[in-house]
Length: 220
Image 1 (cartoon, rainbow, N blue to C red):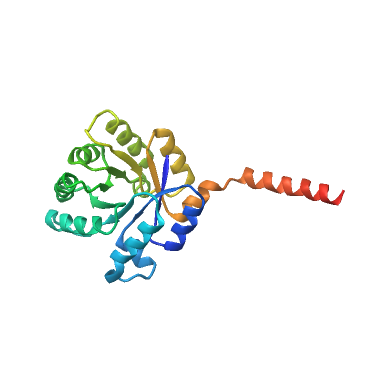
Image 2 (cartoon, rainbow, N blue to C red; image 1 turned 135 degrees about the vertical axis):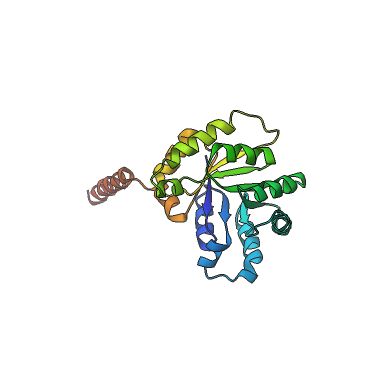
């Protein structure tokens, strides 16, 4: 499984990249606004992220119509070679994905909540498909079960191009573990959740025991 960071925070991206586990980034204008950024500088910020990341950077269009999405997609793709255009799994999004994919521009179809949506996204030419896990959990439904269904269904077919499933809206290390066991290709997680994936209480106890033993050796 590959790890994508879901953020627009440059410091978080630099730190995660220093661990040697960061394979990409997903971001959007909302995450960018949380960093205090201004909309007028959004494209320049995407460029800075792309310089930090050795992998795909999904940048989201906020357009609502297919023509506007295609226009946004072309502008975003022109920012850097590793930009992936993020579009919603809607009728307009599918039409825009078909056009962008025909131009060689990779698309991440997001806000995917069902097997039929995922299959249509792949048929339209999406390079990445992002089923949301956490948002199902928010309404007391089985987000991991939905993800498992999407992974199984998409893997049944050859769409004529590479398609990777991104476990999106992931909020815990358990989500990541279960997504990996299901065969999801990527987990996109906030920085706090990524840190929790590294941490484990038994690791902490092991380190404490090691340090106590080391102190005894030094004091012997």
